[in-house]
Image (cartoon, rainbow, N blue to C red; front, top):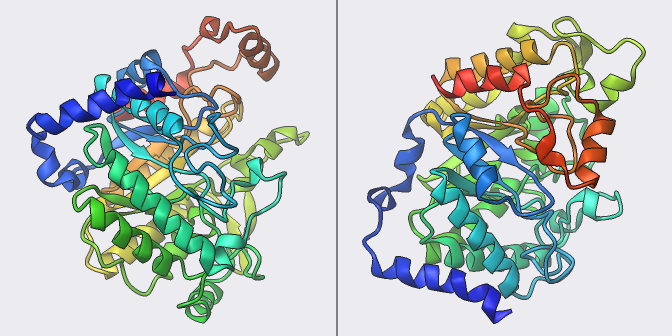
Length: 397
């Protein structure tokens, strides 16, 4: 274990003896202009070639999750989401080595756990939603300890652009609130659960306080509630009491059309034109509807006196084989860029799923992807998909 950990420790020791990069004085400067990037949600730690390929697309940042990687315990870097006791050394070493590779490629990294103590990611929890963090204060204490430890370990790494505290939190999930319900219901829910374990801004405030005790400069990115809905963010009464916070939402609406189940329909829903249940009624989705949905986050920021560059579309995407995916991606990017925010597409070269790998052309069917991946021949897949060409054009502007 020590042999594996030693290179990372040496790297940190050397960094401590060198002058800090200019941006270290105020890491928020990276986010003062709109940034474009991608998401890395792989089951294994990406290597140098991966990050070089992502950087070559024009991406300047990557939202990196480590939670799928195989670690010392059940949950990578947490050890065990049932009871956090400290960062496993070998897991931390692997993360640091991965950050080194991203830095060498010129990419900034936003580290993003899919799980926290008491909130294990559903796909690693036997398909069950883990509600403990939102109902038992003891798990909030453990989450505070985890982020304090992780910030202490990562604070001097030059690749880090932000700490994304938790991917797609959903404290609303088990309470009866309808996802994409009326704004009145969302506001009432937020007021009802203020100062309870389900109060997401209150939890974030605690996590940020712990981070700031060891790291006063690294920006923090916070996903809004109900799986990072922009409308949930719009229900927050105030911003968080920290001037280095980025507010993130995810964009897959209309989910009935952009997601994998749509591809199993005899006639997949089309965009524009698909109609879904939304905000207590029906919504016909087109370019303007997409902009209004996304605009909820930017309107909230404006009402709170925050610049548009504090808002991040941290995930957006659609099934690559969906005929309307290119039109949808364009409308989402147009909406975010018109408001002056940041974005990151989902996802780049995911190693266990090809559904949103935009480099793959339509001739590459899922079966071919899985067979070649299983044979260790994923590097032979053609990567000339037009959808990635669309994204590259936008990132290289």
